[in-house]
Image (cartoon, rainbow, N blue to C red; front, side, top):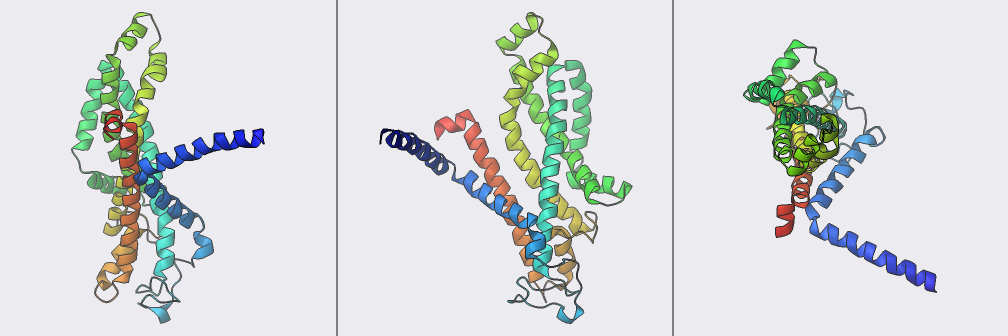
Length: 290
């Protein structure tokens, strides 16, 4: 009896603490739940959807029904299958761009914030890159190379690097002036040790929040590029090129645009909910007010 009571006493506060955290952070919970559902949908796409490239001229422009949940397009392809497989492309692009841009921006931002000699040259390059709209820079890079999913990821990652770099640099500059950093420098601690042990941890909280916004921005840019015909190749279904191919038949078959548009909006909304929730949780000033 004593052991059982003790285990129950320990489990009760843990459950209570988890429930309190969920109640305090509903936006994170909702956003994560939507993203997990989308990720599961993308992973099991071959099990729950037909071939997204399968042509069926006899079933062109069919309305949503029990047979074709999201209807068919002008080539008789199942819009539901194309939307489900499109989730793979959007999530791969968003996560990959977030990881690449965050990793490169973190390294450049730390170096710029710590070494003033590097700061002047590198930040002028970043300012020049930020002067060009991200989608135009991505289009320019894609036109120089053969369109593929990898090239699209690289082309979207490059314009996002300056934004991450400026954020990390601002954090490093504020931390570098702290007394404990000055004391570490005066004691002869190596610069690499100072950056890794003392400065780098201070960048994690704002960097995680920024990564969520980079992810949602990358998904929107990829959809825009595919809509313009400069993104993923036609043989790779994405929400952008599904909408692009269906825009001609918008009045006749609006479902071709409606369903991928809703999925795109829900995905970006879920990522932004997670980002806003993390910002409220990780920012001590906002956390104190809440």
